[in-house]
Amino acid sequence: MQMGKACNETVTGEARVRIEGGLAHFPGLAKEQSVSFGDLDSPERQELTSLADQADFFDCTPANDTAKPDARTYTVGLTIDGRSREIRVAEPIRDPAMAKLVSVVRRLSKQHSVNR
Image 1 (cartoon, rainbow, N blue to C red):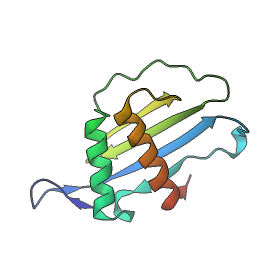
Image 2 (spheres, one colour; image 1 turned 180 degrees about the vertical axis):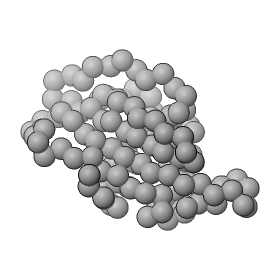
Image 3 (cartoon, one colour; image 1 turned 120 degrees about the vertical axis):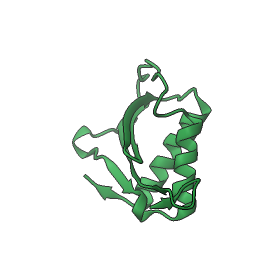
């Protein structure tokens, strides 16, 4: 849990990522990785919520990009304070804010992995 903007406001959530495609992709071995906000330090939770806001994650219209041969496709899911959404994005990710969000979700879910 994280303290939000108001001192008594608690932010809870989860971040998930699934990677498909890319060079040497083995579909049977691909697993979704997730991390609970409860397993993250306060700066990591703040970074995720801030990046979700910057990328307008919960309100944006996802790009209809199809993955190029040997490119990866990321399915990123976020649940923050009861709001939940999953977005699929293909490389190269054109929106810098979304690219940063995907990168951070990948890093944190790998560090604090709970494989599904």
